[in-house]
Amino acid sequence: MEQKNAVNPSARPATSAAASKAAAPAPSSGGASLFSVIAIIVAFVLAELIFNFVMGAGSRFKGGVNTNDPLPGDYLATMYKGGVIVPFLITMFLCVIIFAVERALTISKAKGSKSIESFVRSVRQKLNSNDISGAIALCDQQKGSVANVVRAGLKKYQEMGAEHTMNTDQRVLAIQKEIEESTALELPMLEKNLVIISTIASVATLTGLLGTVFGMIKAFAALAQAGNPDATALASGISEALINTALGIGTSALAIIGYNYFTSKIDELTYSIDEAGFSIIQTFAAQHGSKGQES
Image 1 (cartoon, helix red, strand yellow):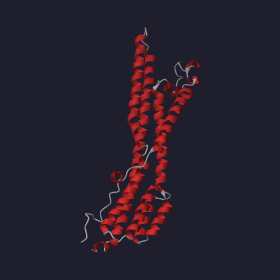
Image 2 (cartoon, helix red, strand yellow):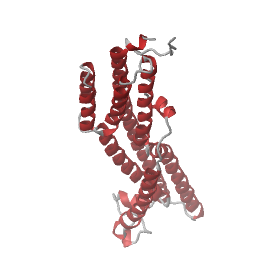
Image 3 (cartoon, one colour):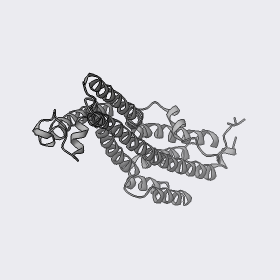
Image 4 (cartoon, one colour):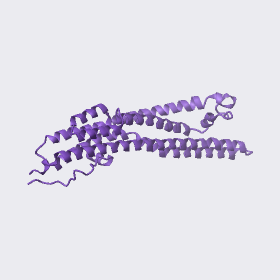
């Protein structure tokens, strides 16, 4: 007597990011980690060069020496006076730019050669006409992460179509598992380096505030040692200290915008995978359901 599995063929498959990560181990991120380390080092070196040779150029200061006050209206020189925290803030800003560009290129490649919506619609049309080979050919043309997952599901569809020792529910589960495992291999590639952007979003503001605190301590210490308090010098010192806060808040805001943008794009890709996976399983259940009722 046939054993029934608690599976509803018309139910949406759990191919979301959370379910997919539980389905299979994520691939090694060694390459991406090496890229991240190199990118951060390059950003720090570039930040030091900008800080010392662009912001700290003698021509930006009175008397041609960067230990003097900045020339009026020269904000780069004023940023130089922000102190040793400034290069770290510049490093964070450059890292946000570098990783944002890298994520944009990766996600664009993951989408494939054509519109995702158009691709999923075409696959569904091929499935409705029971043209599985044609749907696989579309995946080969589309390329990218979504197409890779859909192609894996379609190949499993063909394999299960020729399998007669399993009932329909078991074959549907096999297809669903294949889609989940394929998604688990693709999603980590889309999410890599986002943790760096999200970390910068939190740390940049705190680093800017730290630089401001150091600057305020330095300004008031100089004021306390001066025989005659100079309000102009105090105001200048506070202005230079606040540069750190401005840099930190600006970098943090950019990182938050970038993180939310890329997260939403990844969610769109995940939804497209869910939609295509649902169509594959629903079509298989409809085409082979009668065979699953046999003992």
